[in-house]
Length: 347
Image (cartoon, rainbow, N blue to C red; front, side, top):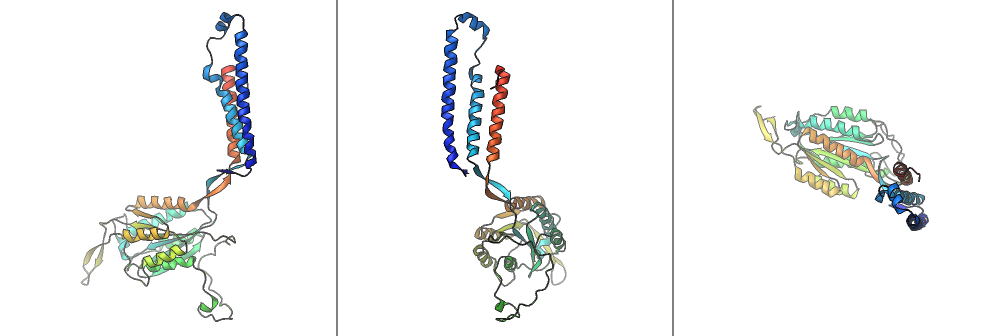
């Protein structure tokens, strides 16, 4: 904790003076009692000494004074406040292994349900994008604040094909990469006019405040090892680290998970599909994210809720003068109430 006006802290020197004044008053009260000529009568009038209770109201008054003096210095402290702007890109595996039923009802359905729960816990101003991947990666929704568009895209997912995890991360990083020069864009030449862009499928995001780029966080949910694609997951993870994009990874499924696929003769064949925890752990460690395991639908929803709280708030330094002033008032009221209850006087 720090203060905006540290010079006012010198006022705390009044506390020792107030304490000395209180001690002198107590000595004067003791001397007056000794002067009482009839000590036997005094003993009958006062049945018992108040002891420590006599000093408690005064101690509360001193604490109230100290708290009030600190509030004059305008103290500040780190508090959790909701982020006003951020982008979250959800990357969901829709390969054939997501049809496994070791997570009820299936891995994919559990992922869809948990993703919807995750959307419920994000601040309204967050932009959310969705990338799905099997043998190829597709951007289903560009980052947007339109939650209905993201939910509609989630409901359209179905599982089949291989696992191009590296390509999916590479596609998701497009939201952070700087735009290419005009000459490098398709159809662009030096000095030519930019080609009119095709209107986006989702509403554009709100203008971002200049001078400070909003954070981007990625959430990768997968249940298998990278099997196809042009780029390897760890290669793209290094690029995400350079772009300062943390990737939170979730290994969905159990080590005993299996999926049935038809063989060449059309007969169903059971194939083990354990999650690739090692790769997902390395991706999270490399990018500064965190790795989770979610063997059940309930645990998966808990992971999403935890991620929502991590992404949705940030520590900021804020003035807490009101807190100190309110504390001083409460201490003053408590001291006065005790003094009235015990000794019938205020203060």
